[in-house]
Image (cartoon, rainbow, N blue to C red):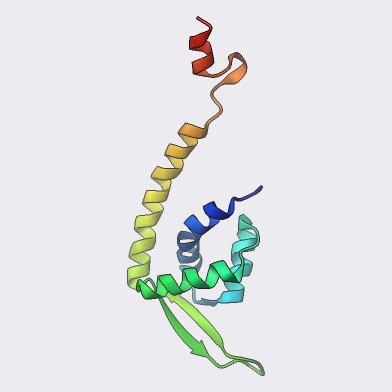
Length: 122
């Protein structure tokens, strides 16, 4: 997917976490692997866990502890009804934002240069 700027990742991480948890309950390490496999690259725990905590504080996800099988327990996260509503809102907002960024960032200069350069040359 190319180089993803850390600020971009932090900005979209809550949306990505909600969408990932829509598939079902999961725990931190598994979420890290799913995000990485989706093309987001390496997501550090120092970024992931605070985002999950904020989602829990906002009521978008529920957290439960489960005993580990022969190891330490795990914290599992699952989407709440409020989280599903938030995900739907954020998906709509993301599509609008993505369209706007694509429009602004599109390479429309072509071989003749930018519109500003074309105007300057008239």
